[in-house]
Amino acid sequence: MAAVLRRLAVQRCSLWRCSVAPLRFPQRLKHRELNRDGTLVLAGGSRSLSARSRGESRWQHTEAQGSVEVDVKRLEGQDEGIAEVLMCRHRARNALGHAFVSQMRELVFSLSSDSAVRVVIFRSLVPGVFCAGADLKERALMNDSESDLFVQGLRSLMSQIALLPMPTIAAMDGVALGGGLELALACDLRTASYSAQMGLIETTRGLLPGAGGSQRLPRMVGITLAKELIFTGRRVGGQAALEMGLVNRAVEENQTGDAAYKEALTLAREILPQAPVAVRMAKEAINRGVEVDIGSGMAIERMCYARVIPTRDRQEGMAAFIEKRPPRYTGE
Image (tube, rainbow, N blue to C red; front, side, top):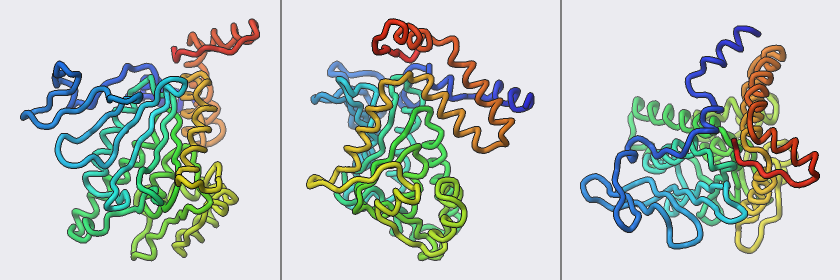
């Protein structure tokens, strides 16, 4: 137990530090200047990035060249603190190609150090699709070494998503296959429409799940069921996914095709009022604790609890209880 405490204490970048750090752009954007209209000046005079949109929400683009395949929308008003990662590679059904993965990695990196974000929703803007999985056209052009390196990068991205310090929710309003389901498995919570189709279908393509699916699925639904699903490459709908514990909530699809997203937003709004540091520390305690024996897990819980004690939010929670009023948490 003492060894576990020492390892946690010297961790180079703990989720606690991420929870209190100010928003920083990725290094490659950090030193760029702002135009007078509030856009970022990019190297070589290429297309600028809007620091603030004309609408009610703030948007962040990641690529100076080419089309935007992944974007971020930060909600405002009563939903301030919720960020949505928007997958919008329409022509390829959000397939996991080089540009898509690169843009997703950059956005996840920026979110990881944004203490203003309390919940992240991963959703698709492509009708009927969450993420179709691997970009087989790109993959066909890779040799064995290139394919292996790309999958390693994909596995790293899923771990990056799983390590985000705030709660994450995948909203599946459609197909989530292969790497698409692995992306959802990397999130903390999942919602799905009854009509959604999910599956780790890699064995039907002569492969096995390579971006964390073979490890995360058994931890969620149990070893024997995970083996059955992976060995057969079976696809399941939203209702079946709910019954086996693959998703947290399943709903009837609506006419606009975003019922799972709306359910995810409802769930995010339930998390939003809670003390953000406490929520982040609870996530760290659970995620780290399930990977070790119960005694070491208790030591992890103790350390996470100790980080919450000196916060202003804890004092606010106690004061609100005594004064019989809703708490006003600031994340400090």
